[in-house]
Length: 189
Image 1 (cartoon, rainbow, N blue to C red):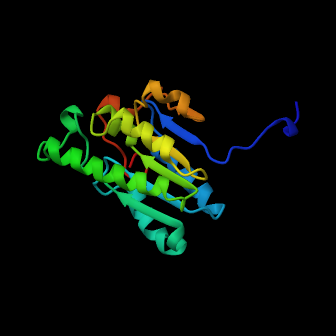
Image 2 (image 1 turned 180 degrees about the vertical axis):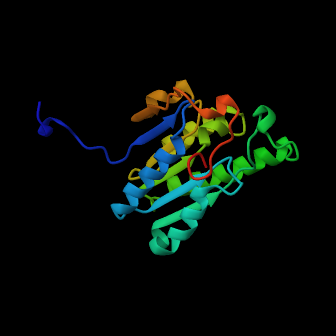
């Protein structure tokens, strides 16, 4: 078999999921690769509203890439995450933030303006019931023909696997959080 036997897709659906660390980091690596290829990229982030390192980096590089990079930070934090959830935020507020973020993702994915739309932590939003599996399916199927989409977060819906082209399951072998160590700034967030 030679490379002449292979075809090229106009766009792909990429999923980074699983219990292991590295899903957002993989999405950011994809962002770097796409910007290096002079693509227009939208990075739409669900869940994380607190200050994380990627927010600083995206804010700082945005002026360099002007209209080639769009960043939207949505969400209201962890939801249904046991002791890690923020009890001061109502379910209604979580769902409204997820809907607003979903609308931003849909607008970016269907606009035809972006070659890549990264929806960071969207799988968590679906798993937690903040948006539906049907909404995620619609996002995938409605995207512009030339728009690749990357979906990160734990628990990607198994019934949507046939819609994906590349799926990577981040498998945790060991993480110091299990030994009651907090996440490290610059490494975990």
